[in-house]
Length: 490
Ligand SMILES: *[C@@H]1O[C@H](CO)[C@@H](O)[C@H](O)[C@H]1NC(C)=O
Ligand SMILES: *[C@@H]1O[C@H](CO)[C@@H](O)[C@H](O)[C@H]1NC(C)=O
Ligand SMILES: *[C@@H]1O[C@H](CO)[C@@H](O)[C@H](O)[C@H]1NC(C)=O
Ligand SMILES: *[C@@H]1O[C@H](CO)[C@@H](O)[C@H](O)[C@H]1NC(C)=O
Image 1 (tube, helix red, strand yellow):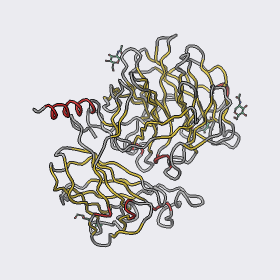
Image 2 (tube, helix red, strand yellow):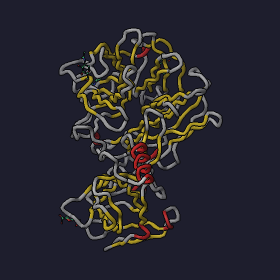
Image 3 (cartoon, helix red, strand yellow):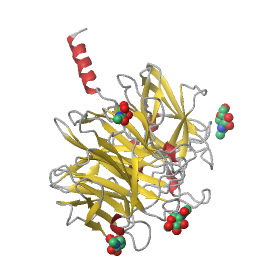
Image 4 (cartoon, protein in one colour):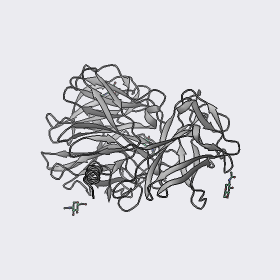
Protein backbone atom coordinates (compact mmCIF):
# COMPACT_ATOMS: atom_id res chain seq x y z
CA UNK A 1 0.00 0.00 0.00
CA UNK A 2 1.38 3.42 -0.97
CA UNK A 3 1.87 5.89 1.86
CA UNK A 4 -0.71 8.28 0.50
CA UNK A 5 -3.26 5.48 0.24
CA UNK A 6 -2.43 4.25 3.71
CA UNK A 7 -2.76 7.77 5.04
CA UNK A 8 -6.14 8.22 3.33
CA UNK A 9 -7.23 4.87 4.71
CA UNK A 10 -6.22 5.74 8.26
CA UNK A 11 -7.87 9.14 7.95
CA UNK A 12 -11.12 7.60 6.71
CA UNK A 13 -11.04 4.90 9.36
CA UNK A 14 -10.51 7.55 12.00
CA UNK A 15 -13.21 9.84 10.71
CA UNK A 16 -15.87 7.17 10.54
CA UNK A 17 -15.07 5.55 13.86
CA UNK A 18 -18.71 5.86 14.88
CA UNK A 19 -21.83 5.18 12.90
CA UNK A 20 -23.65 7.99 11.21
CA UNK A 21 -26.63 9.77 12.70
CA UNK A 22 -29.37 10.17 10.11
CA UNK A 23 -32.27 12.41 11.20
CA UNK A 24 -35.62 11.15 9.91
CA UNK A 25 -34.25 7.78 8.75
CA UNK A 26 -35.66 4.44 9.83
CA UNK A 27 -33.39 3.55 12.74
CA UNK A 28 -32.97 -0.13 13.51
CA UNK A 29 -31.56 -1.63 16.69
CA UNK A 30 -28.92 -4.38 16.82
CA UNK A 31 -31.71 -6.99 16.52
CA UNK A 32 -32.95 -5.37 13.31
CA UNK A 33 -36.14 -3.97 14.84
CA UNK A 34 -37.21 -0.33 14.57
CA UNK A 35 -35.95 1.78 17.48
CA UNK A 36 -39.18 2.32 19.38
CA UNK A 37 -38.67 4.90 22.17
CA UNK A 38 -40.63 8.06 21.50
CA UNK A 39 -40.75 11.43 23.30
CA UNK A 40 -38.20 10.21 25.81
CA UNK A 41 -34.71 11.09 26.96
CA UNK A 42 -31.10 9.98 26.88
CA UNK A 43 -29.50 9.42 30.29
CA UNK A 44 -25.75 8.92 30.63
CA UNK A 45 -24.52 6.20 32.99
CA UNK A 46 -22.02 8.10 35.16
CA UNK A 47 -19.86 4.98 35.71
CA UNK A 48 -19.57 3.64 32.18
CA UNK A 49 -20.35 6.65 30.00
CA UNK A 50 -22.93 4.55 28.17
CA UNK A 51 -25.98 6.31 26.75
CA UNK A 52 -29.41 4.98 27.69
CA UNK A 53 -32.41 5.93 25.59
CA UNK A 54 -35.84 5.75 27.25
CA UNK A 55 -39.13 6.43 25.48
CA UNK A 56 -42.74 5.57 24.85
CA UNK A 57 -43.02 2.07 23.43
CA UNK A 58 -45.68 1.76 20.74
CA UNK A 59 -46.57 -1.20 18.59
CA UNK A 60 -48.44 -1.36 15.30
CA UNK A 61 -52.04 -0.28 15.68
CA UNK A 62 -51.51 0.73 19.31
CA UNK A 63 -51.05 4.34 20.31
CA UNK A 64 -50.72 4.29 24.11
CA UNK A 65 -50.14 1.95 27.03
CA UNK A 66 -47.04 0.12 25.81
CA UNK A 67 -44.88 1.19 28.75
CA UNK A 68 -41.37 2.61 28.59
CA UNK A 69 -38.70 0.98 26.43
CA UNK A 70 -34.95 1.25 27.00
CA UNK A 71 -31.94 0.99 24.67
CA UNK A 72 -28.21 1.43 25.26
CA UNK A 73 -25.48 2.82 23.02
CA UNK A 74 -21.82 3.79 23.11
CA UNK A 75 -21.98 6.13 20.11
CA UNK A 76 -25.59 7.45 19.97
CA UNK A 77 -26.00 5.71 16.61
CA UNK A 78 -25.93 1.96 17.40
CA UNK A 79 -28.73 0.94 19.75
CA UNK A 80 -29.19 -2.28 21.67
CA UNK A 81 -32.66 -3.05 23.03
CA UNK A 82 -33.11 -3.98 26.70
CA UNK A 83 -36.88 -4.43 26.44
CA UNK A 84 -39.19 -2.50 28.75
CA UNK A 85 -37.82 -0.46 31.65
CA UNK A 86 -41.36 0.12 32.90
CA UNK A 87 -43.86 -2.50 31.82
CA UNK A 88 -47.61 -1.84 31.95
CA UNK A 89 -49.46 -3.72 34.73
CA UNK A 90 -52.96 -5.00 34.00
CA UNK A 91 -55.55 -3.46 36.35
CA UNK A 92 -53.14 -0.85 37.80
CA UNK A 93 -54.61 2.62 38.44
CA UNK A 94 -51.76 4.47 36.71
CA UNK A 95 -49.69 2.11 34.56
CA UNK A 96 -52.33 -0.21 33.11
CA UNK A 97 -52.30 -0.65 29.32
CA UNK A 98 -55.29 1.74 29.24
CA UNK A 99 -53.28 4.51 30.93
CA UNK A 100 -51.25 7.28 29.34
CA UNK A 101 -47.52 6.88 30.06
CA UNK A 102 -45.93 9.74 28.14
CA UNK A 103 -42.65 11.62 27.86
CA UNK A 104 -40.65 9.46 30.35
CA UNK A 105 -37.43 10.93 31.78
CA UNK A 106 -34.79 9.23 33.90
CA UNK A 107 -32.31 10.90 36.30
CA UNK A 108 -29.73 9.48 38.65
CA UNK A 109 -30.11 10.40 42.31
CA UNK A 110 -26.85 10.56 44.27
CA UNK A 111 -28.75 10.53 47.54
CA UNK A 112 -30.69 7.30 46.91
CA UNK A 113 -28.02 5.85 44.56
CA UNK A 114 -30.91 4.88 42.29
CA UNK A 115 -32.34 5.87 38.96
CA UNK A 116 -35.62 7.77 39.10
CA UNK A 117 -38.10 7.73 36.24
CA UNK A 118 -40.74 10.45 35.94
CA UNK A 119 -43.44 10.84 33.29
CA UNK A 120 -46.83 12.29 32.44
CA UNK A 121 -49.25 9.83 34.06
CA UNK A 122 -52.87 9.98 33.00
CA UNK A 123 -56.02 8.13 32.11
CA UNK A 124 -57.13 7.76 28.52
CA UNK A 125 -59.19 10.96 28.53
CA UNK A 126 -56.38 13.06 30.03
CA UNK A 127 -58.50 13.75 33.10
CA UNK A 128 -55.88 13.03 35.78
CA UNK A 129 -52.90 15.19 34.66
CA UNK A 130 -50.39 13.67 37.10
CA UNK A 131 -46.67 12.94 37.27
CA UNK A 132 -45.66 9.30 37.63
CA UNK A 133 -42.61 8.19 39.60
CA UNK A 134 -40.81 4.84 39.50
CA UNK A 135 -37.33 3.81 40.68
CA UNK A 136 -34.65 1.21 40.06
CA UNK A 137 -31.14 0.46 41.36
CA UNK A 138 -30.24 -0.46 37.79
CA UNK A 139 -30.34 2.10 34.98
CA UNK A 140 -31.87 -0.42 32.56
CA UNK A 141 -34.57 -1.32 35.06
CA UNK A 142 -36.96 -2.89 35.74
CA UNK A 143 -38.40 0.22 37.41
CA UNK A 144 -40.84 -0.14 40.30
CA UNK A 145 -43.87 2.12 40.39
CA UNK A 146 -43.92 4.48 43.40
CA UNK A 147 -46.63 7.09 42.88
CA UNK A 148 -48.58 9.36 40.57
CA UNK A 149 -49.05 12.83 42.01
CA UNK A 150 -50.24 16.33 41.14
CA UNK A 151 -47.13 18.57 41.24
CA UNK A 152 -47.62 20.97 44.16
CA UNK A 153 -51.33 20.47 43.70
CA UNK A 154 -51.41 21.48 40.04
CA UNK A 155 -52.08 19.85 36.66
CA UNK A 156 -49.29 18.38 34.60
CA UNK A 157 -49.33 17.38 30.95
CA UNK A 158 -46.25 17.34 28.67
CA UNK A 159 -43.30 16.56 30.91
CA UNK A 160 -39.56 17.24 30.84
CA UNK A 161 -36.59 17.03 33.22
CA UNK A 162 -33.48 19.15 33.34
CA UNK A 163 -30.39 18.56 35.53
CA UNK A 164 -28.07 21.51 36.12
CA UNK A 165 -24.48 20.33 35.64
CA UNK A 166 -23.18 23.03 37.98
CA UNK A 167 -24.87 21.69 41.13
CA UNK A 168 -26.46 18.42 40.00
CA UNK A 169 -29.92 19.64 40.92
CA UNK A 170 -32.87 18.42 38.84
CA UNK A 171 -35.94 20.33 37.74
CA UNK A 172 -39.27 19.30 36.27
CA UNK A 173 -40.79 21.11 33.32
CA UNK A 174 -44.47 20.62 32.67
CA UNK A 175 -47.22 22.28 30.75
CA UNK A 176 -50.39 22.32 32.73
CA UNK A 177 -52.55 21.31 29.82
CA UNK A 178 -55.03 22.43 27.21
CA UNK A 179 -57.58 23.98 29.52
CA UNK A 180 -58.15 27.70 29.01
CA UNK A 181 -56.92 28.56 32.51
CA UNK A 182 -53.83 26.37 32.21
CA UNK A 183 -51.68 27.60 29.39
CA UNK A 184 -48.49 27.84 31.41
CA UNK A 185 -45.29 25.82 31.54
CA UNK A 186 -43.81 25.28 35.01
CA UNK A 187 -40.17 24.98 35.97
CA UNK A 188 -40.06 23.42 39.42
CA UNK A 189 -37.12 22.16 41.48
CA UNK A 190 -36.93 18.67 42.95
CA UNK A 191 -35.77 18.05 46.50
CA UNK A 192 -32.13 16.93 47.04
CA UNK A 193 -32.89 13.28 46.32
CA UNK A 194 -35.20 13.86 43.31
CA UNK A 195 -38.11 12.05 44.94
CA UNK A 196 -40.56 14.97 45.13
CA UNK A 197 -41.03 18.50 43.80
CA UNK A 198 -40.17 21.38 46.07
CA UNK A 199 -40.60 24.84 44.65
CA UNK A 200 -41.81 26.60 41.51
CA UNK A 201 -38.75 28.41 40.12
CA UNK A 202 -40.41 30.01 37.13
CA UNK A 203 -43.70 29.93 35.23
CA UNK A 204 -43.73 30.53 31.47
CA UNK A 205 -47.09 32.27 31.66
CA UNK A 206 -49.81 31.95 29.02
CA UNK A 207 -47.54 31.13 26.09
CA UNK A 208 -49.60 27.98 25.49
CA UNK A 209 -46.60 25.76 24.73
CA UNK A 210 -45.69 22.11 25.35
CA UNK A 211 -42.93 19.49 24.90
CA UNK A 212 -40.48 21.46 27.11
CA UNK A 213 -36.75 20.86 27.55
CA UNK A 214 -33.81 22.94 28.76
CA UNK A 215 -30.25 23.04 27.43
CA UNK A 216 -27.45 24.62 29.44
CA UNK A 217 -24.27 26.32 28.24
CA UNK A 218 -21.48 27.87 30.33
CA UNK A 219 -23.39 31.14 30.54
CA UNK A 220 -27.00 30.49 29.69
CA UNK A 221 -30.06 28.34 29.91
CA UNK A 222 -32.26 27.87 26.85
CA UNK A 223 -35.76 26.45 27.28
CA UNK A 224 -37.17 24.91 24.10
CA UNK A 225 -40.88 24.23 23.63
CA UNK A 226 -43.29 23.59 20.80
CA UNK A 227 -46.68 25.07 20.07
CA UNK A 228 -49.72 22.88 20.56
CA UNK A 229 -50.71 21.33 17.23
CA UNK A 230 -50.96 17.69 18.29
CA UNK A 231 -48.82 15.40 16.16
CA UNK A 232 -48.40 18.04 13.45
CA UNK A 233 -45.05 19.82 13.69
CA UNK A 234 -44.83 23.58 14.20
CA UNK A 235 -42.23 26.26 14.89
CA UNK A 236 -40.42 25.26 18.09
CA UNK A 237 -39.34 28.30 20.12
CA UNK A 238 -36.65 28.92 22.74
CA UNK A 239 -36.33 31.32 25.68
CA UNK A 240 -32.94 32.35 27.11
CA UNK A 241 -31.90 33.27 30.66
CA UNK A 242 -28.76 33.74 32.79
CA UNK A 243 -30.39 31.86 35.64
CA UNK A 244 -33.26 29.42 35.91
CA UNK A 245 -35.34 31.87 37.93
CA UNK A 246 -35.07 34.34 35.04
CA UNK A 247 -35.61 36.89 33.77
CA UNK A 248 -36.27 34.84 30.63
CA UNK A 249 -36.15 36.39 27.17
CA UNK A 250 -38.96 36.59 24.66
CA UNK A 251 -39.39 33.31 22.77
CA UNK A 252 -37.64 33.03 19.39
CA UNK A 253 -37.70 30.41 16.63
CA UNK A 254 -34.85 27.88 16.37
CA UNK A 255 -35.16 26.72 12.74
CA UNK A 256 -35.98 28.42 9.41
CA UNK A 257 -39.62 29.45 9.31
CA UNK A 258 -42.04 27.21 7.46
CA UNK A 259 -39.85 24.15 7.87
CA UNK A 260 -41.88 23.50 11.04
CA UNK A 261 -38.60 22.83 12.83
CA UNK A 262 -37.54 20.44 10.07
CA UNK A 263 -40.78 18.56 10.65
CA UNK A 264 -40.15 17.83 14.30
CA UNK A 265 -41.26 18.52 17.86
CA UNK A 266 -38.94 19.33 20.76
CA UNK A 267 -38.78 17.08 23.82
CA UNK A 268 -35.21 16.60 24.94
CA UNK A 269 -31.68 17.97 24.58
CA UNK A 270 -28.38 16.28 25.32
CA UNK A 271 -25.00 17.88 25.96
CA UNK A 272 -21.85 15.97 25.01
CA UNK A 273 -18.82 17.38 26.83
CA UNK A 274 -16.08 15.86 24.72
CA UNK A 275 -12.31 16.09 25.09
CA UNK A 276 -12.13 18.73 22.34
CA UNK A 277 -15.56 20.22 22.07
CA UNK A 278 -18.93 20.53 23.75
CA UNK A 279 -21.81 19.67 21.45
CA UNK A 280 -25.44 20.31 22.27
CA UNK A 281 -27.92 18.00 20.56
CA UNK A 282 -31.59 18.58 19.93
CA UNK A 283 -33.47 15.28 20.26
CA UNK A 284 -36.79 15.87 18.51
CA UNK A 285 -39.65 13.63 17.47
CA UNK A 286 -41.03 13.38 13.96
CA UNK A 287 -44.47 12.00 14.69
CA UNK A 288 -46.36 9.91 12.20
CA UNK A 289 -49.98 10.15 13.34
CA UNK A 290 -51.02 7.54 10.76
CA UNK A 291 -48.64 5.03 12.31
CA UNK A 292 -47.31 6.31 15.63
CA UNK A 293 -44.98 3.42 16.35
CA UNK A 294 -43.04 4.23 13.15
CA UNK A 295 -42.51 7.85 14.18
CA UNK A 296 -38.96 8.97 13.57
CA UNK A 297 -36.26 10.90 15.34
CA UNK A 298 -34.82 14.26 14.33
CA UNK A 299 -31.58 14.56 16.25
CA UNK A 300 -29.54 17.61 15.27
CA UNK A 301 -26.60 19.60 16.60
CA UNK A 302 -27.47 23.05 17.86
CA UNK A 303 -25.44 26.18 17.19
CA UNK A 304 -25.57 28.30 20.31
CA UNK A 305 -24.03 31.76 20.56
CA UNK A 306 -24.21 33.09 24.10
CA UNK A 307 -22.96 36.55 23.06
CA UNK A 308 -25.59 36.97 20.37
CA UNK A 309 -28.01 35.04 22.59
CA UNK A 310 -29.09 32.80 19.74
CA UNK A 311 -29.75 29.11 19.29
CA UNK A 312 -30.26 27.44 15.91
CA UNK A 313 -30.69 23.83 14.88
CA UNK A 314 -28.15 22.82 12.23
CA UNK A 315 -29.69 20.56 9.60
CA UNK A 316 -27.59 17.63 8.40
CA UNK A 317 -28.84 14.74 6.27
CA UNK A 318 -26.09 12.52 7.64
CA UNK A 319 -23.45 13.35 10.26
CA UNK A 320 -20.69 11.65 12.14
CA UNK A 321 -20.58 12.33 15.89
CA UNK A 322 -17.53 11.40 17.92
CA UNK A 323 -18.84 11.17 21.48
CA UNK A 324 -15.28 11.06 22.92
CA UNK A 325 -14.01 14.29 21.38
CA UNK A 326 -17.47 15.87 21.19
CA UNK A 327 -16.85 16.78 17.55
CA UNK A 328 -19.34 16.20 14.78
CA UNK A 329 -18.77 16.42 11.04
CA UNK A 330 -21.30 16.51 8.22
CA UNK A 331 -20.87 13.55 5.87
CA UNK A 332 -20.29 14.65 2.27
CA UNK A 333 -22.42 13.12 -0.47
CA UNK A 334 -22.76 13.41 -4.23
CA UNK A 335 -25.65 15.46 -5.61
CA UNK A 336 -27.83 14.61 -8.62
CA UNK A 337 -30.28 17.32 -9.69
CA UNK A 338 -33.87 16.90 -10.84
CA UNK A 339 -33.05 19.57 -13.44
CA UNK A 340 -30.72 17.01 -15.10
CA UNK A 341 -32.98 13.97 -14.55
CA UNK A 342 -35.29 12.28 -17.10
CA UNK A 343 -39.03 12.60 -16.77
CA UNK A 344 -41.54 10.12 -18.14
CA UNK A 345 -45.32 10.22 -18.67
CA UNK A 346 -47.00 13.21 -17.05
CA UNK A 347 -44.02 14.11 -14.87
CA UNK A 348 -42.35 17.35 -15.98
CA UNK A 349 -39.87 20.01 -14.94
CA UNK A 350 -41.18 23.37 -13.83
CA UNK A 351 -39.63 26.74 -13.07
CA UNK A 352 -39.13 27.16 -9.32
CA UNK A 353 -36.89 30.03 -8.19
CA UNK A 354 -36.44 28.40 -4.75
CA UNK A 355 -35.22 25.10 -6.22
CA UNK A 356 -31.76 23.97 -7.32
CA UNK A 357 -30.93 25.25 -10.82
CA UNK A 358 -34.30 27.06 -10.73
CA UNK A 359 -36.12 23.84 -11.60
CA UNK A 360 -38.24 21.30 -9.78
CA UNK A 361 -39.70 18.02 -11.12
CA UNK A 362 -43.44 17.70 -10.54
CA UNK A 363 -46.43 15.58 -11.60
CA UNK A 364 -44.80 12.43 -10.20
CA UNK A 365 -47.79 10.10 -10.13
CA UNK A 366 -48.17 6.33 -10.17
CA UNK A 367 -45.85 4.02 -12.15
CA UNK A 368 -45.90 5.91 -15.40
CA UNK A 369 -45.18 9.51 -14.48
CA UNK A 370 -41.74 9.18 -13.03
CA UNK A 371 -38.40 10.96 -12.63
CA UNK A 372 -35.15 9.02 -13.19
CA UNK A 373 -31.70 9.99 -11.98
CA UNK A 374 -28.96 8.33 -14.08
CA UNK A 375 -25.24 7.70 -13.78
CA UNK A 376 -25.28 7.28 -10.01
CA UNK A 377 -22.11 5.99 -8.42
CA UNK A 378 -22.88 3.21 -5.96
CA UNK A 379 -20.96 1.45 -3.20
CA UNK A 380 -22.34 -2.09 -3.64
CA UNK A 381 -23.70 -2.04 -0.10
CA UNK A 382 -26.43 -0.11 1.75
CA UNK A 383 -25.97 3.65 1.73
CA UNK A 384 -28.19 6.58 2.67
CA UNK A 385 -29.78 8.61 -0.10
CA UNK A 386 -31.52 11.88 0.79
CA UNK A 387 -34.43 12.99 -1.36
CA UNK A 388 -34.95 16.76 -1.41
CA UNK A 389 -38.62 17.39 -2.10
CA UNK A 390 -41.46 19.86 -1.88
CA UNK A 391 -44.90 18.70 -0.77
CA UNK A 392 -47.41 21.43 -1.62
CA UNK A 393 -50.33 19.64 -0.04
CA UNK A 394 -50.46 22.28 2.65
CA UNK A 395 -52.75 24.10 0.18
CA UNK A 396 -54.89 21.09 -0.61
CA UNK A 397 -58.36 20.56 0.83
CA UNK A 398 -61.51 18.74 -0.09
CA UNK A 399 -59.69 15.51 -0.86
CA UNK A 400 -58.57 15.15 2.74
CA UNK A 401 -60.65 15.04 5.89
CA UNK A 402 -60.40 18.14 8.03
CA UNK A 403 -58.37 20.18 5.58
CA UNK A 404 -54.73 21.20 5.62
CA UNK A 405 -52.58 22.75 8.37
CA UNK A 406 -52.49 26.17 6.81
CA UNK A 407 -56.26 26.42 6.42
CA UNK A 408 -58.75 27.53 9.03
CA UNK A 409 -59.61 24.50 11.13
CA UNK A 410 -56.89 22.51 9.42
CA UNK A 411 -56.04 19.10 10.80
CA UNK A 412 -53.86 17.75 8.02
CA UNK A 413 -51.78 14.68 8.20
CA UNK A 414 -51.45 13.93 4.51
CA UNK A 415 -48.06 13.10 3.27
CA UNK A 416 -47.08 12.28 -0.25
CA UNK A 417 -45.63 8.84 -0.75
CA UNK A 418 -43.15 8.03 -3.49
CA UNK A 419 -41.95 4.71 -4.86
CA UNK A 420 -38.21 4.37 -5.32
CA UNK A 421 -36.83 1.75 -7.69
CA UNK A 422 -33.14 1.03 -8.27
CA UNK A 423 -32.00 -0.04 -11.76
CA UNK A 424 -35.55 -0.84 -12.89
CA UNK A 425 -35.91 -3.68 -10.38
CA UNK A 426 -39.66 -3.44 -9.66
CA UNK A 427 -39.44 -6.58 -7.53
CA UNK A 428 -38.08 -4.28 -4.90
CA UNK A 429 -40.03 -1.03 -4.51
CA UNK A 430 -38.95 1.17 -1.61
CA UNK A 431 -41.47 3.49 0.05
CA UNK A 432 -40.49 7.11 0.63
CA UNK A 433 -42.74 9.17 2.94
CA UNK A 434 -42.70 12.85 2.05
CA UNK A 435 -44.37 14.91 4.73
CA UNK A 436 -45.82 18.33 4.20
CA UNK A 437 -43.20 21.00 3.63
CA UNK A 438 -45.16 24.21 2.96
CA UNK A 439 -45.13 25.77 -0.49
CA UNK A 440 -41.71 26.89 -1.68
CA UNK A 441 -39.89 24.98 1.09
CA UNK A 442 -37.61 22.12 0.13
CA UNK A 443 -36.77 19.57 2.83
CA UNK A 444 -35.07 16.21 2.65
CA UNK A 445 -35.90 12.72 3.82
CA UNK A 446 -33.51 9.74 3.76
CA UNK A 447 -33.80 6.19 2.48
CA UNK A 448 -31.26 3.39 2.80
CA UNK A 449 -30.63 1.94 -0.68
CA UNK A 450 -28.27 -0.65 -2.09
CA UNK A 451 -26.76 0.49 -5.38
CA UNK A 452 -24.42 -1.49 -7.59
CA UNK A 453 -20.78 -0.65 -7.22
CA UNK A 454 -19.73 1.77 -9.96
CA UNK A 455 -21.32 4.43 -12.10
CA UNK A 456 -24.23 2.80 -13.82
CA UNK A 457 -27.09 3.11 -11.36
CA UNK A 458 -30.49 4.61 -12.06
CA UNK A 459 -32.92 5.67 -9.34
CA UNK A 460 -36.52 6.03 -10.53
CA UNK A 461 -39.13 7.82 -8.43
CA UNK A 462 -42.88 7.39 -8.93
CA UNK A 463 -46.00 7.83 -6.81
CA UNK A 464 -47.61 5.39 -4.36
CA UNK A 465 -51.13 5.36 -2.92
CA UNK A 466 -51.41 7.94 -0.13
CA UNK A 467 -55.08 7.42 0.60
CA UNK A 468 -56.16 9.94 -2.04
CA UNK A 469 -54.09 9.24 -5.12
CA UNK A 470 -50.82 7.71 -6.32
CA UNK A 471 -48.90 10.88 -5.57
CA UNK A 472 -45.22 11.51 -5.04
CA UNK A 473 -43.97 14.95 -4.00
CA UNK A 474 -42.02 17.33 -6.26
CA UNK A 475 -38.30 16.58 -6.45
CA UNK A 476 -35.41 19.04 -6.29
CA UNK A 477 -32.38 16.73 -6.04
CA UNK A 478 -31.03 13.64 -4.40
CA UNK A 479 -27.77 13.29 -2.46
CA UNK A 480 -26.07 9.89 -2.29
CA UNK A 481 -23.96 9.40 0.86
CA UNK A 482 -21.02 7.02 1.22
CA UNK A 483 -21.64 3.66 2.90
CA UNK A 484 -20.36 3.33 6.45
CA UNK A 485 -17.17 1.41 7.02
CA UNK A 486 -18.78 -1.42 8.96
CA UNK A 487 -22.10 -1.35 7.17
CA UNK A 488 -25.21 0.71 7.74
CA UNK A 489 -27.74 -0.46 10.20
CA UNK A 490 -30.44 1.73 8.72
C1 LIG B 1 -60.19 10.25 33.91
O1 LIG B 1 -60.19 10.88 35.14
C2 LIG B 1 -61.13 11.94 35.29
C3 LIG B 1 -60.92 12.59 36.66
O2 LIG B 1 -61.04 11.62 37.67
C4 LIG B 1 -62.56 11.39 35.11
O3 LIG B 1 -63.49 12.44 35.17
C5 LIG B 1 -62.63 10.69 33.75
O4 LIG B 1 -63.89 10.07 33.62
C6 LIG B 1 -61.54 9.64 33.62
N1 LIG B 1 -61.56 9.08 32.30
C7 LIG B 1 -61.60 7.76 32.09
C8 LIG B 1 -61.60 7.32 30.65
O5 LIG B 1 -61.61 6.96 33.00
C1 LIG C 1 -28.90 -4.49 35.27
O1 LIG C 1 -29.11 -4.38 33.85
C2 LIG C 1 -28.18 -5.08 33.07
C3 LIG C 1 -28.46 -4.75 31.62
O2 LIG C 1 -29.80 -4.98 31.28
C4 LIG C 1 -28.27 -6.57 33.38
O3 LIG C 1 -27.28 -7.24 32.64
C5 LIG C 1 -28.03 -6.78 34.88
O4 LIG C 1 -28.24 -8.13 35.18
C6 LIG C 1 -28.99 -5.93 35.71
N1 LIG C 1 -28.67 -6.03 37.12
C7 LIG C 1 -29.59 -6.21 38.05
C8 LIG C 1 -29.09 -6.24 39.46
O5 LIG C 1 -30.78 -6.32 37.80
C1 LIG D 1 -52.07 25.93 39.09
O1 LIG D 1 -51.94 26.47 37.78
C2 LIG D 1 -52.71 27.64 37.55
C3 LIG D 1 -52.45 28.03 36.10
O2 LIG D 1 -51.08 28.09 35.83
C4 LIG D 1 -52.31 28.73 38.52
O3 LIG D 1 -53.12 29.85 38.33
C5 LIG D 1 -52.41 28.22 39.97
O4 LIG D 1 -51.88 29.19 40.84
C6 LIG D 1 -51.66 26.93 40.14
N1 LIG D 1 -51.86 26.38 41.46
C7 LIG D 1 -50.87 25.94 42.23
C8 LIG D 1 -51.26 25.33 43.54
O5 LIG D 1 -49.68 26.01 41.88
C1 LIG E 1 -48.01 0.02 -10.42
O1 LIG E 1 -47.47 -1.24 -10.73
C2 LIG E 1 -47.91 -2.29 -9.91
C3 LIG E 1 -47.15 -3.54 -10.27
O2 LIG E 1 -47.01 -3.65 -11.66
C4 LIG E 1 -49.41 -2.43 -10.01
O3 LIG E 1 -49.86 -3.47 -9.17
C5 LIG E 1 -50.07 -1.12 -9.63
O4 LIG E 1 -51.47 -1.19 -9.78
C6 LIG E 1 -49.53 0.01 -10.44
N1 LIG E 1 -50.02 1.27 -9.91
C7 LIG E 1 -50.42 2.26 -10.71
C8 LIG E 1 -50.95 3.48 -10.01
O5 LIG E 1 -50.38 2.22 -11.90
